[in-house]
Length: 419
Ligand SMILES: *Cc1c(COP(=O)(O)O)cnc(C)c1O
Image (cartoon, rainbow, N blue to C red; front, side, top):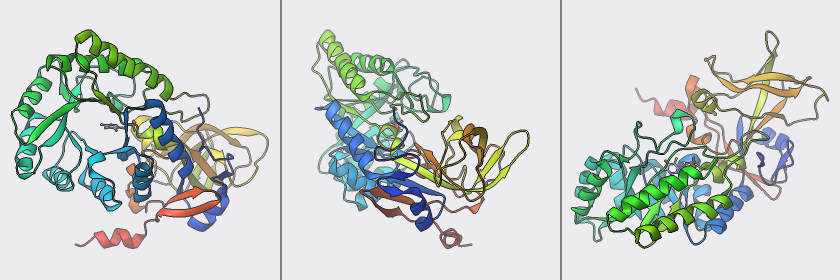
């Protein structure tokens, strides 16, 4: 699986634009996003999964252009906060194709969703059912909801991203009866309609067997309820971050998982529900490349290459021990390479972009570095740690580059400080 954008000629151009030209014009660090790659992945998913529904999980990366692309490619959109919803709304995403999920929705999240008329709300607790029912009381039509179920499937990924096992904060347990209790509550509320069940078993899942098991367990529960119109199997499809790694193959997923649903439905004598899948990372991760400028090279026990970004634009190595590939992007380096550790500028020893990666032996201050596969959970997880301003997002396509999100400035930071 390719870790670079579809249109890249790594490590020098993306979308027909020289990375050095982007760095000159927009500064560094900068996130570069390949529009064609995003659209291509949307189409691949739509085609492989037809006639099932594909919803893009906006938390991976969202800005108004992304909302438009997803809309034009006919996907649905997952949001998990009033903020993400406001972005979708401001770009005119059709409300009936929006799902709101989250384990702790605030009254403001719920009110914003009802106000815009989102298609589905995924409920995550019994108290949320009651709260939502009260808020939905004066709607003209009942609000369609899905109940988020914990199917007790362990996808064998990092603990921080295993969301379908019993002992974590998401969803309602099948085993304990909590899911059944939430279903009873939904059915008892005239302002709500139970559209179906939802699960999301984790992230960076490379094999389909966990999805098949989860799907069969949810269908079994559906059968106890006499069948339901919809089954949402969440996202979590893995991508390759480094050469030689493999992501989840969408065609294999499409060949196997709907079949598991259909056969389980047949065995239990219920009609097949409409299926939805919610990829986030798999749509946008490999579309993104982050550009950094080398500030210094420090030789010691190991060689540290210090760049002008770090954990504020990519917290994933610190959070999950994620590993990345790094390339020298501005020039052809020396033929021989040596292992270096690329680190950020933040006041943390754990502020590492990539440990022990090969770079040309003559890497030096002023060089431009490119880190591929940084389109998902980078901009959306960026922070202002050390009062560092967040990088811009620059789209590329057909030899043209243009800003989607501008670079943050110190004035932006000071404007919020009203005390
Ligand atoms: C995070 C999330 C997704 C997307 O996960 P990826 O790993 O980006 O595919 C989909 N659905 C739900 C409910 C999520 O929380």
